[in-house]
Image (cartoon, rainbow, N blue to C red):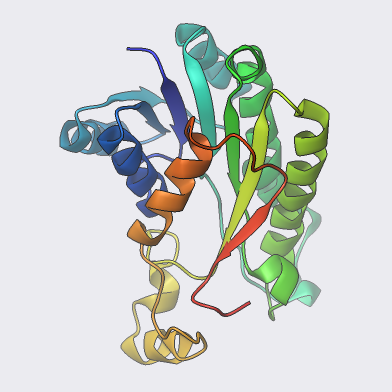
Length: 234
């Protein structure tokens, strides 16, 4: 099936919601992550294809791009990490590791699929964080690498125009595997919810429709934008 959209981090709350929305619209989402068992379960739920990939291994990214060569019209990079600590106890390796997974691996996915995306007038969707523009305590590591993603979005939107659209979504805290340590405590969860004008923690479903629109053929005039899906917190 043509009209493939590669979703790196496709088993996560946001990535899976994007895949679900795209599937409902008749596209062919390919969900991609490291966890084979999770991929098998999620792909069965959606009746879609999957690929196993460690995004820190560039050769694996390149193999996936070659396998689906010719049919890719979209790419979403939903992979990320959260490393929260005050600057005084950070080490260089914290920033380097964060940049590798949050930024550099995203760049490599785009490079691997560039030809397809360019030939098919495709779309790219990155994910940042509200912490980049809002500024929070102990978020220096993640905000630095995700800030680079926002700069990348604007740069590539200019460089790839008019063929490829490049956009980014900057969420507030979302209920996902990565955030469980922060929101598993009910008191802390409620306190975080109250920080938002719409007082709740984000859910994967909050991102599916806008993300799928930006990745789909319906989007023919939106590029270089940072969208805040954050309950109004920004």
